[in-house]
Length: 80
Length: 80
DNA sequence: GTGTATTTGTTCGTATGTATC
DNA sequence: CGATACATACGAACAAATACA
Image (cartoon, rainbow over all chains, first blue to last red; front, side, top):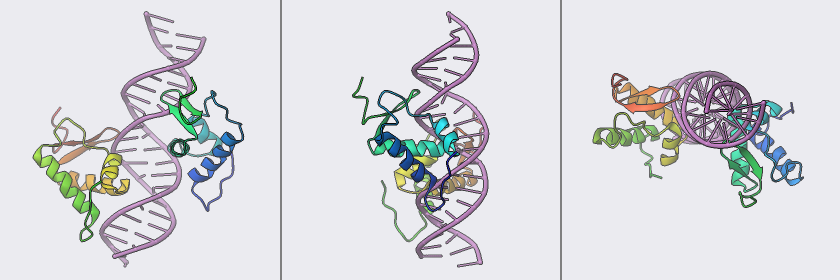
């Protein structure tokens, strides 16, 4: 469980952490990111907040989401 | 996205618009009204404000709300 | 074929804090 | 001071599709 500061919204802080993991290659294409529930547990945040983070990274074009499956690194499902 | 004047609270203006849609039959019984989130997007207002509007129409007896489902035209769930 | 678990999607309910009028 | 309005964040419940034993 990671410590979060209070001077910034949780969703921004966690989004920043996940962004780093994507750019560093810790999260690799083809492998689903942690689920909303898993993200919630790791950072001690609600699922709704985790969803907001996923949505933000998706709007940045960093990831794409497949319903009922998960989210993946890459701007879209161009990689089959 | 609809233009809102400044001489009246947003929630009153939008409540008036939705009231019209109900009375005109645009929103029909049995069909859920747009969600709080959807109302927020259509009028460019926060979800909290959309909730206030729903609450106002509910107090007028125009609609009723079913938790986790939505709001419906009709004074209550007497219509099955 | 049949369940069961997982995962995302969506909804309303609630509370807190901040800012503005 | 109260009303308006926004952002953040939690919770709870259910649906639908998928994956797996």
